[in-house]
View 1 (tube, one colour):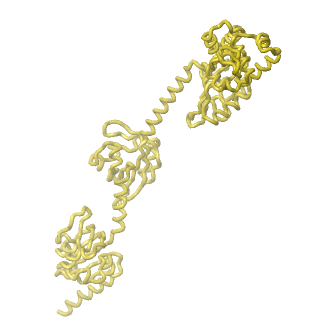
View 2 (cartoon, rainbow, N blue to C red):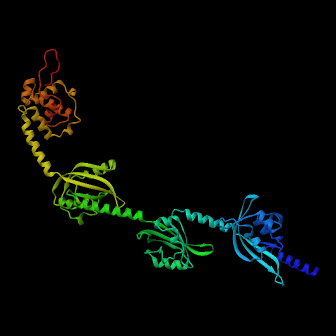
View 3 (cartoon, rainbow, N blue to C red):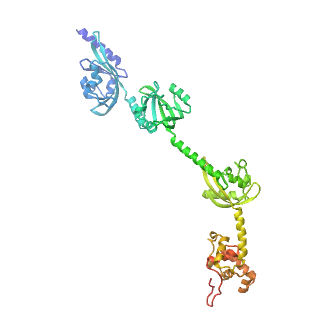
Length: 503
């Protein structure tokens, strides 16, 4: 009997020596439920310093540890791997989460195998638990799972063995309108994420080889039957040790809508630009080189579009006055726009046109530009000059016009806004004031000289000083200036008063 009992113990010691240095944890049990031995790895991955802390029996082990499956389902005592192997069951790769009620900080993920060792009589002689600490691996997978699920960027994972989808995040479901159940388990042939890809053949080849698929444009089919333009890329990875491909997407629909809106805006601008009745041009911001001109510009200047494009106004001698370029550039640098600047424009035939030029800085196709509009006022200005000459001739003797007529003529002769910044009556000397009043009465220089008892030359000097002070250059403008301030004539001062009273 002694020999029969000593041999199994010798065999067990030999077995213990063989497995003591293994990287996996090994726990040996007797068929009666006693835990007879555990290697250092088994103790360490249970957070136990000795066999007593691990549990002297299977029941002690169950009491000292709480086990859950990966779906958070708590195992009943009979489902513990140690109890299953004690019941004579062999099994492989049971993954459980192990915690210790006595230590809230302890948490491990164990991958367990159960072995039943039998003797010559086929009766169990030793029961073995082989335990691998999978905490790091499953922890990394948990972190990946959380990051994958919460990442707002659409993503989907396809197994490379059967090309079926294993995982999908909410971003992909939101983008395509599919439900999770409609995606998981489907193959790439049913839900083609490389549909109409720019380099589809290359992408399929790389997918078959399990290699990285670079970014490329593709068109995803949506649940509602529509499509969505995306950028798709593929990155190989392993999920549960199976080779997979992670597809990520960037939604290009907002960009496509913006590009469509921009294109429509540019088309509308182009049509309005070409059909505008006034000459218009788009110039480079730096040197005013012409980038585009409309039909009205061609008609006004006599230049054809091919001969003006990419040329500056200086190249075409468009400005009759070379100083115009510098003035326009300074104004645009200061305010970004020019409004109704009077310029002289030279045509291809050499004629000079009087024009009003307006300009506005703009960005077109990412380039700093200036949009220029020109109004030809040559005929209007010529007519105004003829009218002003006629009014000047009439107003040489304005004594017989009523005040209302004088003011109406003055408004035609000189717009109101040009008189806004003139001097006050108080700045005039008594002599200048008298000259102004007599001019308003219609007296000429000789009549004024006789009334004031001075020479005509003195009167001319007074008139020159008067013009300088009130900012005019013509007799008619001086009369208008005076009428606007209530001066219609001159009344000699009464005795005791120093200045004449305006009337």
